[in-house]
Length: 176
Image 1 (cartoon, rainbow, N blue to C red):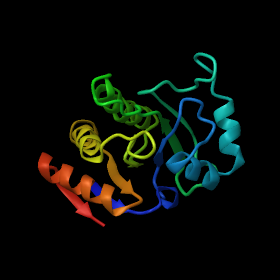
Image 2 (image 1 turned 45 degrees about the horizontal axis):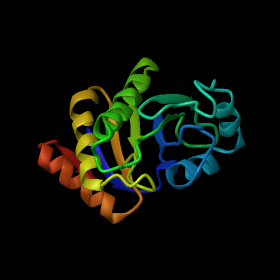
Image 3 (image 1 turned 90 degrees about the vertical axis):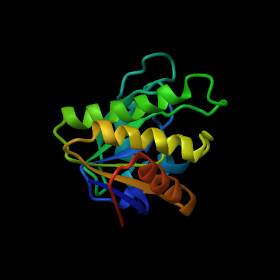
Image 4 (image 1 turned 180 degrees about the vertical axis):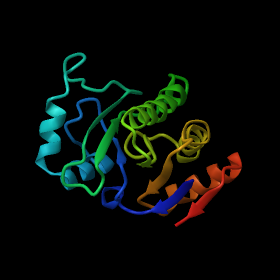
């Protein structure tokens, strides 16, 4: 079942929250900064322990990594790096879809049942909300079997985009 809510994702008691991270995994602004602040300093230490795949990059765009949730109510954090919007002609849709696919794969491999997603790339990365939430909802419809999924947003604009995308896709959802 999909729930669409307006809340602070760092307050949710789920198996995993998804962190819209940057490639360093060492914190930033938006969801990433909030996740690091709420999880406490052990999250930063755990992220430092993730090997770099190239200098300064622990998680390339479109991929995902998982850490414990530490001081969060969520047991785990799935970090994924969405694409920066550059007009949509530089592979952004495929990279964003990959974020959701890889997050679900990590959750499935770990035996998790509940997962909360922010609107990946919709903050400072500038991805248009309607396009991004349509990609997310498609991922929910095709990959979320067996999961309780929460689409979590901090503001009303993204909340409306999530609702519209779910309706447009014919996906049943619960408004909370």
